[in-house]
Length: 333
Ligand SMILES: NC(=O)c1ccc[n+]([C@@H]2O[C@H](COP(=O)([O-])OP(=O)(O)OC[C@H]3O[C@@H](n4cnc5c(N)ncnc54)[C@H](O)[C@@H]3O)[C@@H](O)[C@H]2O)c1
Image (tube, rainbow, N blue to C red; front, side, top):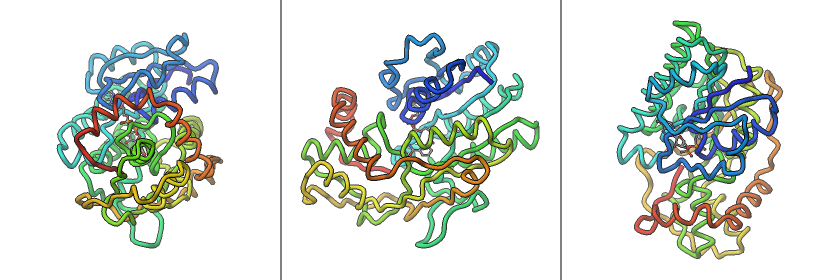
């Protein structure tokens, strides 16, 4: 496999993945199909746009003719990062989530079948499992029990991918990762939002009492895991990806304030999100044991690097942040 179609490659994880993948494999070619929604930003890949092994196409995964045209060029592997990804937006209006995350994935799966691609990686999320109690971890066998329209749309796409494997033998594999953090994450998500608000000395809005627990992974560790799944993952399988790193939202916010040497008095508890899952945590034994992957980033170091990146790259987030948050005060995942 040397010719890859990466969808949603102008977003947070997709752009980190493209940079990682092009650097690591010197004979791979990548087409990045992204329709540049509010979350897509070509500046995420500005340093690689002249690479002859990389091509950007502005367009939607819902556009069947465009997807066919791209696959005709001889794509061997599709990695589907494209999605509407913000839970709060899905609660406000779920229509685009169904269109992109379900119908768009169906277009890709169907054309991957028609063009006999060698592998299809569906990038999913731990959120499809719903909320955990105080104890236990989600394994790949845990029941799917989504709470938000976002996670319901991702769960539907997972079932579609599995059905294409079972019904047509499409070589599909699903990854379900925990919460990512790192550079180039859009300012509406928890960690960049809190960093930016702290830099600006604004109040940091924290849902409920801040006790909701998420399992955090550095985006580069996620990219390394997807790399392992592309090359060694068994078709028809699901792989959970997580770094065994549970933190409450309040702990994360306090870490950020400590790194930036700001006062906890900036924390502002706000009304909880409807259907807010209490805890996510992933059992990563399957990918560790079968694919030899393990996370490299230690959370405190990864978070410090991320804070430094936002401090040094104000030009990257300032305009988007201003547009989003001048009149609102929302927080995230
Ligand atoms: N961020 C996380 O913590 C996390 C965790 C687990 C899984 N995921 C999954 O990883 C994937 C990427 O997440 P992200 O955080 O980078 O999201 P993001 O919102 O930063 O990026 C999504 C990208 O998809 C593009 N896109 C949206 N609709 C499209 C369409 N119809 N056609 C082509 N491109 C389209 C957007 O323009 C954007 O560039 C998503 O599938 C998400 O569900 C994210």
